[in-house]
Amino acid sequence: MDFLNALVVFLNFVFIPAAAYGAQLALGALGVTLVYGILRFSNFAHGDTMAFGTAVVILVTWGLQAMGISLGPLPTALLALPFGIAATAVLVLATDRAVYRFYRIKKAAPIILVMASVGVMFVMNGLTRLLIGVSEYRFDDGERFIINVRDFREWSGLPEGLALRSTQALTLVVAVIVVAALFWFLNRTKSGKAMRAYSDNEDLALLSGIDPERVVRLTWIIAASLATIAGTLYGLDKSFKAFNYFQILLPIFAAAIVGGLGSPLGAIAGGFLVAFSEVAVTYPWVKIVGYVAPWYEPSGLMQLLGTEYKFAVSFVILIVVLLFRPTGLFRGKSV
Image (cartoon, rainbow, N blue to C red; front, top):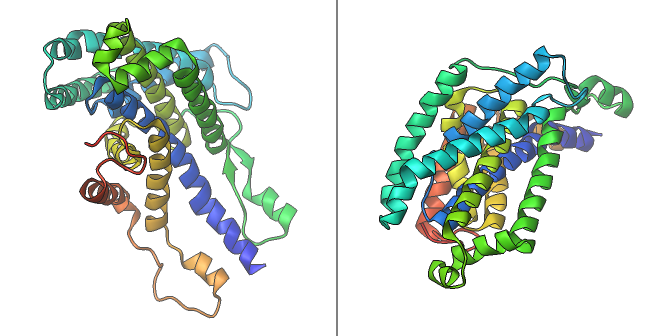
């Protein structure tokens, strides 16, 4: 019985939240690694691209709700998601045309593009705040729980209850669908193969007749789609505040680098590794230990770090990987 209670607490406060958060980081890191692998620079504006796309989704969601349109038990934001993706794709394509294309034609060093992306980041941040404001918003309508604590206790007879929020389950389902679709596109379609060829060897791809501008456009559209989906899922699961997406940029980059920049599979693995590390290090394990080892009386919460240091975990992981394995777990391109 004690073991089952410990398992329920672990699932409730560690595994399920970390799995949902890891899926969100993985989708964000996929966008970062795609841009790095094909356009060959680290896009520091990715977090604020997520924020802009989510802001558009929220505005469209409010409009649909005002017209009485909903998806019943599912969040209305799913209906608004295509509008957010379209608006974000237009914005990043315009940004590429106005900023990045100039440096690409000049064959500027990657660090120049990185610094340009920092400028774009601040512009996008201001644009998002102008669009939706600086307040915190919740936009997760529909059914709140798939499994709630009271029903689980009645069903299991355990004193500990399990809760599975609909946004957590939705995050995992959507992430699986998006990742499967992306891998199918990259491996099975002509455009996807062209993007991979361009990433592997730009000069040889050009000699093969691949249109570089088309590859660039596809890259930005896919990155914008991934950013909007990741940002919307993150906002549904937690809440939306424009500045939060600037903060999440560090764990996203940590996930991409840990997995291996330029490696889509590495981005997914890195996302879950960073998420589980953050949750495990900042969770107070005293309750689980109390069930597993009732004879042991800990003096504190058995929490390695407070939750306010969550992003410090990502920073430490990032530094360790850069020092000892700069190509990441899946041997992407070195930073």
